[in-house]
Image (cartoon, rainbow over all chains, first blue to last red; front, side):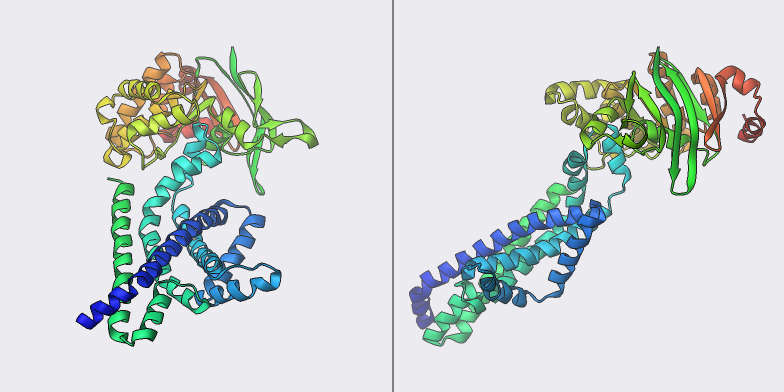
Length: 217
Length: 253
């Protein structure tokens, strides 16, 4: 135990850096992905076919590709197009697109479950369609989106471990490096797992709090 | 003074012709009811006036302004979203299925148009909305969500939501059809009150007695056309059109 604490003390900054980067990447990709997903979901639900078809194709493609492949593609393939992203940037790009495609589908489902008569009612009092979206449709969709959104957030935190393969210094890669030095496999991978669990339980708490806020009663 | 003039209005859904050239004028302060069998085009006519449906031919003139479309013949095109929204705000509509916003309280439902369309200050909007809720007898239900209200109460909130916008013309689309029989009275009484105050209304209804007692004029629609119209009292007492006679007999007045 004393030995472990000693090694932990030595590794404290590396672990903290990894933890912070994992949280940063997760939060940023959840936010970017949600914004992408919002537009994709609105386009899929209310867009005419010239808009809907390309979005549908993109969403289906992305959802059909493993996240790891998306990550490798954004790291290695974009260089051929002359775009050179750092490991963190390409990781962020891949996770945002992955999150956006899933959120797009979730938001489409939520919006489609709202009766079209709600749009009539909004139009009848003189609201334009964008305002109907903001004040009538999205607030109602939020109730359905919230729980799934939290799930997607937790999935993204877990998916961020895959960024270790392209050398992003997030929590898992840092842990691997530490274990490579001190060979305390069980202790440090255990600690790493515990930290991921803690991050996701915080997300779940926040989600429950937010869901209550959007509940009807 | 003519408030609403509909001339030669035609509308088809695909191959099916729903309106085959409707002509109708409504004066300011007049209450006009529209009766007729299901599928005769009553509701479609109302939805065209509120620009919730596009229409294929003819024109709708509200307060001396042609609404919905600009230009004629080949150059005829529908107005943009902003202009349509502005024109829709001149008419109020109450729906058969209430269509309240379920995430907003009764007060929030009435206030939304006031703050976001009429751009009133929040406090002013709240006061006006409370006034209207009081007028439909629901001041004590202002903070309730639609799900916590009875059907009759929800429909009265919907009436307050439409009327608070101070529309030139109010369109009522079978507003008692989705209500339990014992709740119909409270909604119809609210409409009677509005009629007395001189609100111009176009009412699609299956309540024949209500049409006869409240509407100045009644219109009978049949197969996408106005088959007969006249002062309510005489139209119900002395129908001339054979289909109207049959319709009234079945309506069991």
